[in-house]
Length: 72
Image 1 (cartoon, rainbow, N blue to C red):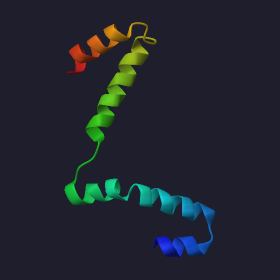
Image 2 (image 1 turned 60 degrees about the vertical axis):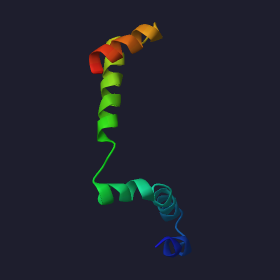
Image 3 (image 1 turned 90 degrees about the vertical axis):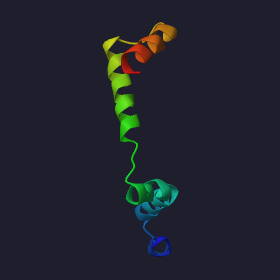
Image 4 (image 1 turned 60 degrees about the horizontal axis):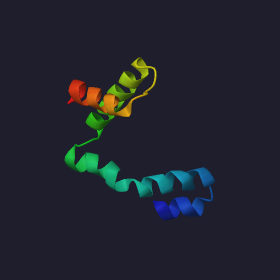
C-alpha cells in the first residue's frame, strides 16, 4: 500500500501514508489488545479544566498539590 501511494504522485497521500507508517504500532495496538489512551486523555482534560477554573497558575507547587488531592 505504501509503495502504491508513493508511486501515485499525490503529495497529500504521501503525507497520510507517512503518518500511518509512523503510528502503525499505536493504530494496530487497538485492534490487537483493545487498548487506548482514553484514560490519559480524560485526566489531561480534567487538568485543563481545573487550570482554566483557576485562571492560570501562579504557584506551581500548590497547583500540583491540589491536583494530587482532587484527582489522585
